[in-house]
Image 1 (cartoon, rainbow, N blue to C red):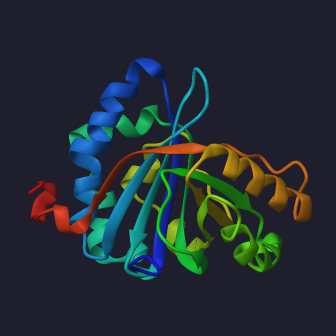
Image 2 (cartoon, rainbow, N blue to C red):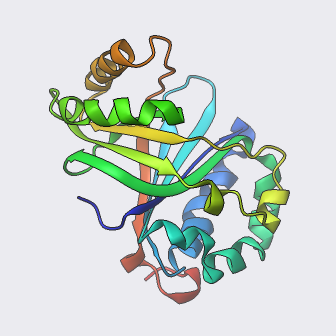
Length: 220
């Protein structure tokens, strides 16, 4: 089981011409800044397998869900850097939700993931499938992440800078060693839960943990 019982998950799209600056912001400033906040333990960044489209999924692991409402985190959200002020308005299809990791099966992390967005009434069914999904060939782990609207919905300066800011109820996150394993896992989940459940596979492109970050957002 990974460290921490909390999470923060974020999706966003950027235009191809803006992608390099976005990635430099993310990997050279933003994630290190976040991981210098007490309670932020690690981050993984993924890029969607979506031809001609730049869509990213960012997953932070938190010490516990209450970090989302902490004084230190809110202070950062209300005092964005100049680079963040330039970046936030360009993020399209922005989806953000944080809360608790409520169930886990398997162990470790795969380089390829399938995040399946769940409705609130699907969480119990997904939990019942978790062990079977994690036991499938070349699947590494499966987790259920449930959003806590209170912490996610706090109004901040950064939130006001984004044209779109949606959320979700929960997430079934499946990690694997190969894309075809995720195809099979999705088929198994969809058969039980929702035949038309959207599925998009992501590859990990960056990772950082709190032990690599010193105060103020600099890197060791």
